[in-house]
View 1 (cartoon, rainbow, N blue to C red):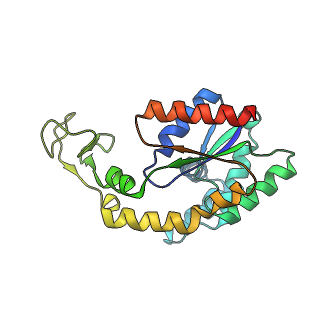
View 2 (cartoon, rainbow, N blue to C red):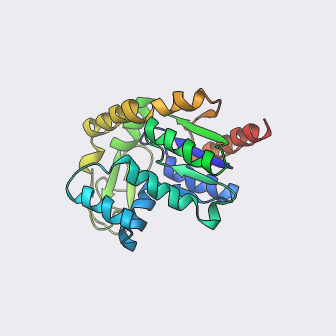
Length: 219
């Protein structure tokens, strides 16, 4: 299957993408991974992306599109792929359609993870990170440390990242509503959108998504 995964920040896209790609035996292609790989390997596209990033500028669509195209042409993506973070806007969605058409392929589904805005804010603004190791993550509601403000693993101080503040999260949501959400209507016009609730336990959301995708494939 060829799937695009969309949803607001805090919807759990990265987590669900990994589980779904594993269940479907297709590669998980994330924008973040594409950028890191191209930059670390010193590819032409990676060097272009780095020059914009170092200047504090947004990486142009054509660079992101080029990276995605190169990745989707790799042998492990012949049977399908799950795109996470691409396309990010309608222009990128149109470019993806053009690429797939040229290769004689098409998308099977666009999985829309739906989460109420207040829940997104609660999920992200409640995160607390260990200063000693950023892999140690807690939450004021969902995963509380035994001692407030102290990491259970190493005893380090827990803090809230600047980009996890409620004000920043709401700004990120505004960007999502303005730039990315329109691709849902774009794909709805093609009959590709499958919307599921991303509330609940991770395994429950994965099972819900797999059921929806199987139904889409059967249809």
